[in-house]
Amino acid sequence: MTEQAVELTKGVRRPSGRDAKRAARAARAGSSIPYITRKIPYYEVLNEDGLSLIEHNADTILEEIGIEFREDPEALSVLKAGGCEVQGERVHFPRGFCRQLIKANAPSEFTQHARNPARSVLIGGKNTVFAPAYGSPFIRNLDEGRRYARIEDFRNFVKLAYSATSLHHSGGTICEPVDLPVNKRHLDMVYSHIKYSDKAFMGSVTHPDRAADSVEMAKILFGKDFMDPLTGRPKTVLINLINVNSPMTYDATMLGALKVYARANQACIVTPFILAGAMSPVTVAGTATQTLAEALAGMAFIQMLNPGAPMVLGSFASSISMQSGAPTFGTPEPALVLYAMAALARRLNVPFRSGGSLCASKIADAQAAYESANTLLPTCLAGVNFVLHTAGWLEGGLSMGYEKFVMDADQAGMMHTLLAGIDLSENGQALSAIRDVGPGKHFLGCDHTQANFESAFYRSPLADNNSYEQWEADGASDMNVRANHNWKKQLAEYVEPPLDPGIDEALLAFMKQRKDAVPDSMV
Image 1: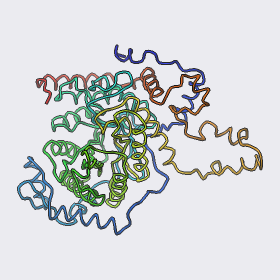
Image 2 (image 1 turned 135 degrees about the horizontal axis):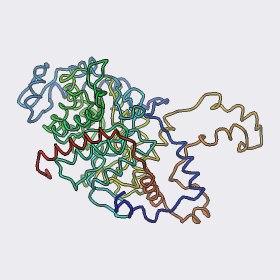
Image 3 (image 1 turned 90 degrees about the vertical axis):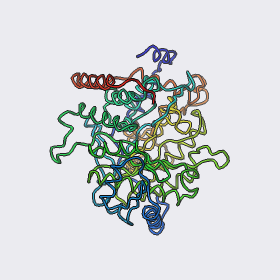
Image 4 (image 1 turned 180 degrees about the vertical axis):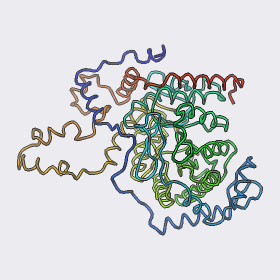
């Protein structure tokens, strides 16, 4: 641990016997499965007529208005050769063209391989994968408040995501390490995911060269296993976030990264990033229509580049305050967009990304809690397959919170239980317990209760459910203080997953060669 990390962990209350038992119980109750397979129905907000109407209107956008593909002549050439009408940088798609191309070629689900095969994730179908928040330039914790993120913070969050049994994925740019040059920091971020976790992770998208570096590092990591001998294609070992520059525009940066990953058979999450009222209409139907049209254009382009390439239909839609223009989160309208888009993705038969634990609050307070819950619950009910921003999001994504991270991971653990549905096995029916106890008695000591004691209910590692007197005797700490102790304890107890020394040496050599090739730049 660094001196800073040692300093932050000073004063951590050593766990009492009761604390240790509670932590052990929580660990056992927590899921160690690589991803969730839902066993509850989807929550639907639109019928067939409503979904068909949005699809029809999205095709109208694609056909009549078009999508701009800026500063990328190659993309325009590919689209024209594929059957689109290109006018300058504006591309018009024949009605139904994108849907037909996608449904004919795109996989309905795919495996993203992790360096530990037991942690590979199946994305699509009835599966849900939880990944951390993404892209924050600041971090926040109780000890220091808000400050710019550093590479040490990035490593810390990778370790926390690795340690969290409720999170299935290491994520991508968990925070922006601003202490490193922009043109080189992607190397350290990808390396941190490889070194400090054995879960699946995301590549860099801020420049085509950085995407190519991510692919090369993945090749070094997987070696001969990078290629699938059955298909002759590279295995999908990276997933990557391609944001549409809404409204209705793809820029050269995102297109460049998309082309690198699609041609390498690595998965792209094509996501319109929309603040409704500014980047889309103020209505739910209008926002869903524009989101679908923008995503269809990018996904069709991927299939033109590499038919069969894995990809995910993404939706990030929130609203703005019509008084101030500031982004808002956890409100009803974005939840309705999420429900609609999840259903539209299922009709297209492709995996879907959205949701998370979003909030506008600057700190991990009551506002953060209810806004995050109002995003995460629709995420799970709707059937999102890849959940970015599951843990840590604060301040509209500007800050990554240490305390918020472990609070959100706790909530994600609860969603494991919700999505597992109701156990209707003989044990779940519990008739033996009801017969044994009979009328007028209690179930605390019966054999069925004792047999199911450890796993009967989800047990939060953070919530305090003791008596007032016990809470007071334990220090009368609130949730933030308990979360502060929790993340420090996790980092103090973190054990690095083993990495082959030869692979580690090759990665470091590649990074040095790439860093030496260009001068530092903060652009």
